[in-house]
Image (cartoon, rainbow, N blue to C red; front, side, top):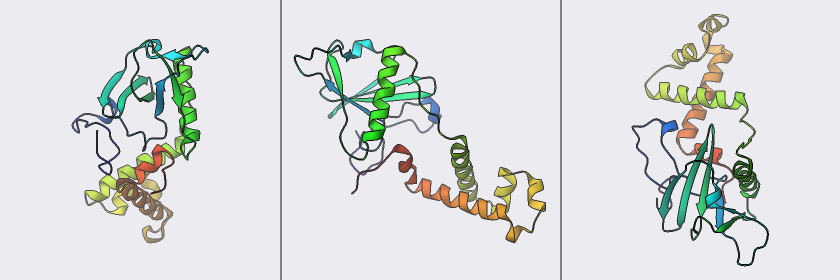
Length: 202
C-alpha cells in the first residue's frame, strides 16, 4: 500500500508497460468509483451476491486494509475494496458513505451489480469532445516539454492549412494551443485527480 500523500496508486505498477496493459489499483479515497464491500450482516434473508458469483477472472491484491480486486470487462473496469475479506461463498453488501463521493460510488455499485447479475454492464461513455480535448492537452504537454513551439504544436494537432488563414500572433488556434498546453501542465501537476471524482476537503 502506498502511504498517504505518496500518490493515488495502491500498488506499484511497471512503468515500462502500456497503461492499458497493466492493472492499476487506485486508493479508495482517491477514486470515487471504487465499490466498497463487506460481509453481509448475520441473519440477512434477502439473497445477496458473493465473491463466488463473480463471472470471469479478476486480479487481487491484499493489503493491511483488506483485499482489492480489479475486474475488467471490455472497456469497463470494476475496482472493489473488500473490508475484512469474506470467504468466496459469504454474501457481501456494499457500503456507500454519505459524503461527496456518494453519487459516483452508488453509480459504480449499480454497474457492478448489473455486471454480476447480467454480465452486460452499461455505463455512459465520456463525452467524445472531452476525451479528445484531454488527449490533445497531453500531446501538447509532451511536445512543450520536448521544447516544441506553440506553432509547431498547432501544426501537429490541427490541419496545417488552418494556420495560413490568419496571422499567427492573433490566430485563434494559437490561443487554443496555449490553453491546451496549460491544461496539460495542470493535469501533470495533480489535476488528473479531478477525473477520479469528487475529492474530500483537506
